[in-house]
Amino acid sequence: MLYVLALQAVPNIGDITAKKLISHCGTPEAVFKTSTATLSKTEGIGGYTIKHLKESKHLKLAENELTFMEKQSIKGLYFEDPNYPYRLKHCIDGPIVLFQKGTVNWENQPIISIVGSRKITSYGLSQCKKIIEILAAFNPIIVSGLAYGTDIRAHQSDLNHQLQTVACMAQGLQNTYPKQHIKYRHFIENQGGFVTDFWSTASMEPSNFIKRNRLIVGLSEATVVIESAEMALGYNREVFALPGRTTDIQSQGCNNLIKTKSAHLVSTAADIPFILNWTLKAPLKGIQKKLFVELDLEEKVIYKFLKAEGKSTLDTITLSCQTPTSKAAHLLLSLELKGVLRPLPGKAYELV
Image 1 (cartoon, rainbow, N blue to C red):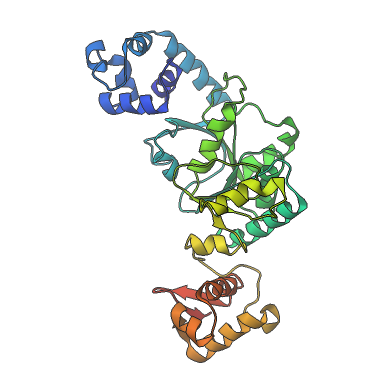
Image 2: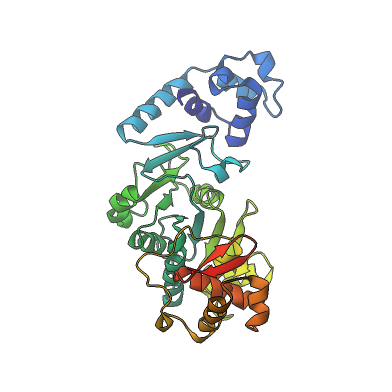
């Protein structure tokens, strides 16, 4: 970690260049001990960069940062370590070290990010809560940015549903931004955590938020956009957008994402796990199953059919119940969330 941090401290070396050097030399430590002649053979590495690599001050800066990390109980996740978030590892400009504070466990859980307007409307807030309520059955890690509006509302809903929630920060982890959200810090650290790739000495700049946003998207399997006047996303991730009225400024970004086929339209919260092909490992706790009072008319039709057939495939259910495939899929997911049925291999279903 000392040499990883020292590499970050060298001017003109970003994450992409650092990865090239590590690949060429073998380890972060080897980068500093490799000859000038060998370093010069690395693509994109010039004399200016090599000159700074040979300066000892970078190791001193790294020692100071490492001491700070130890005092603040901040973990440094190296990009080649097995505990480094899997999806971020495959982003070309993913950080060579991710700073983490809290209790989040990245293993064996779906990860999804939720972003949107800092001036979220009552409609957006209501939909955000509904989406997280549905997703909670799949026990995902939910990532956002702790900002005003959509971000903090998503974190609050995650906490309410006992989900791991992760806040990506645009500064070192010794600070909370915005300061008004420091009251949530303890809860997030104990039910998830904070991550950043900024050092404790980094100054707060507007461009930091662009780097922060790449973490939000890069960590996740998909990004859900609740409301946004404009939105730029990358990394070829799945994107979901909540549509709004054409006259609503807050929904222009979402509507454009849908119009340009850059995002899936979220008509119901169940669209998200259905499109991502998530499956429940167990029925949702606390919900009684097979009670008709909990089922609407369309759900009852499918329930009665499966009760008579024992089990059936999506195609057969669609034909027999005279329901469009997309509608049947949503109904089946709704029944699964209510603990009434379970999915089987081959897109088949049976009652629990």
